[in-house]
Amino acid sequence: MSPYYSEMSGCGLAGIVNRNGEKISGKFIYDSITSMKERGNGMGAGFAAYGIYPEMADYYAFHVMLDDLDYESEVNTVLNRSFKIVKSEIIPTKEVPSLYKKTKPPVFYRYFVEPRDDARLPMESEEDLVVRTVMTINEKVKGAYVISSGKNMGAFKGVGHPDEIGDFFEIKEYKGYIWLAHTRFPTNTPGWWGGAHPFTLLDWAIVHNGEITSYGTNKRYVEMYGYRCTLLTDTEVAAYLFDLLFRKHRLPIRAVFMAMASPFWKDIEHYRETGLEKTYEMARMIRTVYSSAMLNGPFAMLFAFKDGVIGFNDRIKLRPFVAAEKGDTVYMASEESAIRVVCEEPDRVWMPKAGEPVIALLNHCKEEDVCYPA
Amino acid sequence: MKVKAISDGIYEIECGNVHYREVNKKVKELVNKGAKKVILKEVYGQRYIGTGIKENVKIEVYGTAGNDLGIFLYGPEIEVFGNAQDGVGNTMRTGKIVVRGHAGDVCGYGMRGGKVYIEGDVGYRVGIHMKGYKNLVPTFIVGGKAGNFFGEYMAGGILILLGLNRKPGEDIVGDYCATGMHGGVIFVRGEVPKRFLGREVKVFEPDVKDLKLLTDELKGFSEAFNIPVEEILSEPFTKIVPVSARPYGRMYAHRWGIATGIIK
Image (cartoon, rainbow over all chains, first blue to last red; front, side, top):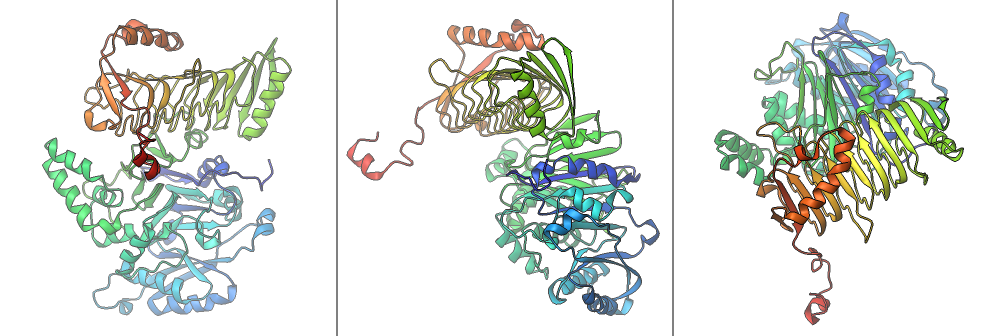
């Protein structure tokens, strides 16, 4: 098969989480996403991993993509204003000849930073400071983009097939307890290094198959809260919505998903008819208050943070999504075969219903007392 | 990709992570050489298995069959020992597909003939726009439960949903069942909540003629999975048929046509 061959299909996604927090080699997610090469066209692939920097777990790890190494000094200046830089280094990459034929890879830098006490504005939390810095770099520093900014996690992404990007960043060398991966088939927005998935903010990471047709509404909504959409793609807005609803507004997990893939009004009405008075009331209020946070259009998404992975579909399931579990490991993917490739005999494989999130949290979290980031 | 001849006319292919194009090319090659049965081992999502073959060969799939299994199928018989993904029997014409597991979304899409038997559950939009013409009548039987949009825009053929693995309180079918249906017939073993049904259909109790049809159609399913027909028929069925042959006829018609009475 020619590495340049591809056909119409749509993106592919994969996620693995060990609920005990045990580390898994990047090899598994690599094999899983690579088996779905058909779903991408070599114009974007990426990985997110949690638990990869155990010695630096107390510091925010900024992965920054630089169009040119010279921009590093400017990023350094912005970071220095609010953080103490504990360590900074070029992210090691390997030469992948096929990659250079279609694109010139940017330089990737990682910084481990600690917030300065005096850098925070009044009423600003530590996380807000990180978000503000990310927005500043993305918006104001030419040729520099923060691709991840959480603790003990990182994103690796670029233009290429998943095996090319995986080899480029030497994904198999990392060990994490949560892995997300994506292979991209860009349709509406450009295929560029910053536009590959996952999209992250703090320790949120998100991979997405489909399109968000409500992008305009969602974008205007998050911009009211100071988020800046700079990565030229619809998925980014979902990451910011999660941050807003989950971290800032502190909604319980199920409420977040009820807002983002809310039930139809007739189904909300049905809750009341069947005596689910409370659910009815909650659904109605969420739909009213967070109408601008509802994601419309066909999609399947995986959403990871330090405490687990949540996968969900649009309200009428216009994109494929399969989940499986084996012991304490939960797998999610666009195709069942991508799970079977790394887990021959799962205990259970199922096709989740539309709009119904699959919530795979680590064992130390109980769903009721929601785990927050940081 | 390892290929070996097991006995006269029977071949085995180890698929692994080999691209579907190579696998399907090999299958065709073997069939052209006179193979009667091709066994595909270690299948990991290879797509379009069985398409482009006109001979009545048997293809066995071990593993997880990829999307569009048996698309445009024209004769072969496919049996999957495992699960299948989306689009089983997409636009198939003749032949048979048996899946000993579950199957994904949009199975039986635009199907116009042949038989599909799924042992377990199916996903969303199964039987969407199935059709039939004269002696070409497709039959799609699901042993488990189905998701939303079951039989949406159905134009012909027979769609049967059994829900044999259904637990108490579980819905057998999802919302928007038979929405826009304008041909064919759906049989559901059990009741379909009215709020899940499209406005274009009516529900009946099967009559003697229907039961005869059901018994005939269920024979193949019963043999494939070794479940007695009587056991399947032990519970009452619901029959769903369309009220109109052209539910959207007026929606897209020219106003002039309606005004002059040409379009009713």
